[in-house]
Length: 177
Image (cartoon, rainbow, N blue to C red; front, side, top):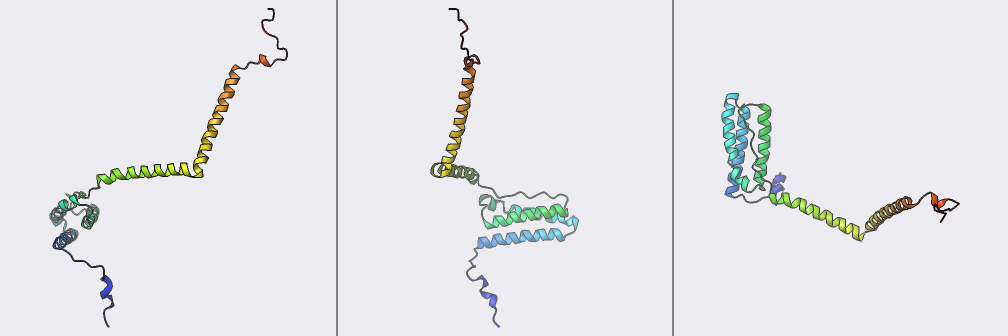
């Protein structure tokens, strides 16, 4: 019987360069050092912890410059796992949290709100100008303005009107002239 699982990776393989291979080896060594910390005695754990931190710091230059690499994502995943494990197990009392080396692009943090605001403004303008929604809003706004004008007009007329003008006698105040 022939192995049917041989062609599973067909089309998903690529050649690994020496640099990538070295980075993978360093990542594996990092994971091994964490496993060593977990399996070691408490007095030996701090020594192994220092080695693990040194291995992690080797990735600083790699991930500081290009944090979009898959390797850096894996290093970030390791950092989260390490911090959680060391906090929960408390094998080494001197343990410090590993810092993140991934940087978020300043350009993306500036571009995202600007693009969002522009898109919302454009969509609002198009909706207002070229759909029935715009005429409905104009009608509502002008209707409210007409109502306010009508109320103001009635208030002004009420201020100048007097009760005496509507009396049936219509006798002037200075009638002896």
